[in-house]
Structures are given as structure tokens and as C-alpha cells.
Image 1 (tube, rainbow, N blue to C red):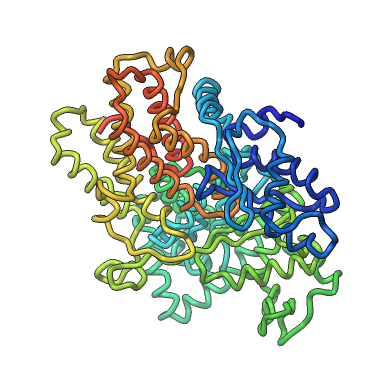
Image 2 (tube, helix red, strand yellow):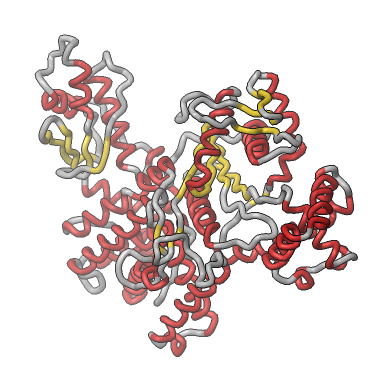
Length: 590
């Protein structure tokens, strides 16, 4: 019988390692069915279970097989399973499930190796090398509001998880920096500031207010409206005076966005709508040469199967629109940036638009017909942020809530809670400020990310800043407590990593060890399903497993102190990596 030593490629990923073992077993058990994939998942009666027996039985029962039913297939899979240091025992349950119990010794060794070699050795390996994540994407001259929160936070986390999984990620901010609204903004700028060179952020003041005033004038003053429409033509025609004014407005807006991104610690590279302008005509030409573009009511359109209205790619006035820009951006990302996976984050309201232009790209032969084959595209839609009335979250004066205001309030409330606990007496002002920021912003992000993005959620500072239950505050406290346990031991944890050994003899130690080892497969699942809440759930359960362990296993001063301190350290390391992937800054003392 072949012996397989734990596979280096899937270090710290028991699910993947077991899949390798069962792949060998399946090929030996049913050599005539080479395309069967191992079905491994966490088990109810073991650590993992292999669920292939029933499916296999339905394939082979009519082919004169030697087996008498699914349990017999399961038994054969166990018999053919290569000997491995990671497997303690296997057994059959019910209609053929193969339950696998992992070796506690192997589990301990895997955790020890991670402590020496680092958590990056546990990173999953995905089959994709380069991806574009298109997220945040606010409009120039408008402030970022609560509606941009989800796209920015979810997009950043997906990018972080893919980057951790060794994918090169092009983080793209597809800002709305082009279009008819710039005509009125430029004309209004010329009226207020005839000398545009001297315009500064301070002079314009609140860009949002500037936008509103220009819009009001556009709606009420026909002469201004006409000037604004001519300004669009001049801008799009490349008139240097108009281009300069446009660039000024974009720069002021960009500086405002940068402040928000800096506070959220989100990195993005801007490639706005205007970036793709030079390529649009050629892309439309390519689509036309393939017979996809037709004339309809003066416009040029692509008819898409399953949709009544066509996708307009050139408007009746000859201008381009979202569809022309989005198709061009997709073409650019596939051909110039050579991306294999392109992920778009917007709310569900735009789902139909994405489905239509994805279908157009498939018709053009840019993408394979099968949406699981690379290069592939995904629209990551999400629900709305709701207020107490279950409607879109707004201020009392029914204004859209500014993102800056939310960040300020999260930090202020967090700081007030820390002062209430007397931390202003114990810490320096810098420590207080940094901790308030980490906890406040972390609470805001986690409340969003822990919700399955397919649904909306009700925004509540009281809930998200609660220090009990599934909140960032509780998790940050849990991490700080682990750090405190290690500090109080007085031991040099880096020395212990080199010399100490872990034993998972107590049931609570073993349960914690198993949960730590399920980190890599969790990140992999969150990446492939594009659901960050999968990682949040893992992190919350990890802190719960640690609490059970700590309440039933004495750490400092016990005979097992070294082993248990190493388990504490491993838990803290995995928690910190989870925080990093969620864009949350950990705190080491609370």
C-alpha cells in the first residue's frame, strides 16, 4: 500500500490533503471512472467525511459492479486509502459516508510548523494568477456616502483574500469622471472663478454643494443649460481650456476620496471612465465587424437573448454610455492587463446591466460560454444598508449619509467607551486615539462583512460597538486577552516556538487545534464563493473555541504551560491574519 507524506503544496489545509489521498483511493477503487472528484467536507461524526460512495454507487450499479451498495463502496475506499501520517482512523456511517479522524500528533506538528515557518505557509493556492477587482467607484464631484461603504469594504476584503492566496490583484477604482454632468460643473466653475488656474479646494469649498448649485442652475436657467451642453461637446472634443477645468474638478474630488481611503486603509488604483475613451471606437468597431451591433431607433445596439430591451452601445446622438465604457474596460482588462478573473462590486440594482454586457462579451467570443472557466467575470452584488425604518439609510433631513460622518461617529463613540472604562488615565493620548480608531473603524467594517452580502443589513452603532456577541469589539477584546495571557506568562514566546512542543490531549485543545487547521480551507471557500462573511463566521467560532479551551485548560503555571502558550500564540496569529484580511487593525491591549 502506497504511503503519502503530507503534501507540501497544501500545508495547513487538511481538506485539500485528504482530497489528494481519496483521489488515489477513488482511482484504485473505480478505475473505470477517472473523472470522479473527491467530495471532502468537515464531518459530523469525524473530523472530515468523504461523501463519494452514494454518488459512485448510482453511476456504477448498472455496470455489473462487484459492490453490493454504497457502504461496500465506502469500505473499498477505506481499504484503498494510502497510509498517511495525518489519518488516525476511518469508519463507515449511514449509507456509505467515510468518516475520517485526524491524528492529533500530526495536527500538533502542523501547528508547530506554522509557528516556525509563518502563517503564509497556510495560504491557499488558487488556479488563477491575475485578477481585477473593480470596487468603490464613486462619482467625481459627489461625496462618498454610505452607499459606497459596502462596495469599498467588501471589495477591499476580496482583494486582500485573493492577494493572500498568491493572486496578483489589480485593484481598480472605476470612478465616474466623464459624462454630461461635467458640462454644467465646468460652466459653473467658469462663472464663479473666471481665472480657473487660481481655483483651490478651499475656494470651491464643499464640492457636494457646488454640484447641487450647478444642478439647480442647470434645471432653472435655459441659457446656462445650453452653455453646459456645449461645454460637454468641447470637453469631449479635447478643448484644452475645458480639459484643464475638468482636470481641476477631478483633482479636488480625488483628494477628498483619498482622505476616506486613507482612514479605511484601502488601497486602489484609479482607472476611471475617461481612461477608456481612446479605446471605445475600436471596440465598437470590433463588435460591429462580428455582426453583433445593429441599428435600432437611431441608436446602435446589441440584442441579447433573454432580455426585451437591447443593450445600447452608441446613443442616437452618437454619444457613448455606460455599456460602451464597460465593454471597453472589459476588453482592456482581458487584452491589455491580461486578467483571468474580473470581479465587479456594485449593489444589486445594477445586476441586469452586468448580466447583459457579460452576455454581449460571450457573444463576441471574449469570454468562454461556461461561466466557471477562465477568463471569467463575476458581478458581486450586495443588498442595501438600511435604517431603523427598514428603508435606505438616510439622515433625519432625508439626506444621504456621508461616509466621513459615519467614520467620525464610529471613532468618537469608541473613544467615549474607552474613556468610560478609565483608559484615558492608563494610556497616552496617541494610544487612546489609535485604539479608538482601530475599534471604531473595525466595528463598522465587521458589521458589514459578517452579513451575507446577498442581503441588506440594518445600520446600528449600538449593535456594532457592543462588546458582547458577534462584533469586532468582542473579537478585538478576545485577541487582546490572548496577548495578555502570553505577556503574563513572562516567557519568550519566540524561543518557545523553536524549542516547545504542542500536545492536543484535552478535548478542548484538540477542538481548538482542528479549528485552527481549517483556516486555509475557509479562506479558499470565501475566495471561490466571493463571500467574506464565511471568514467572519470562522473568526467568531475561533474565538468561541478559544474561550472553551481557556475555561477548561489552565495555561500559566500548569504542567502543560509550554504547549498551551503555543496554542494561544497560534490562535492569536490566525486571528491577526483574519483581521488583516478583513481590513481591521488588531489591538494588543484593551
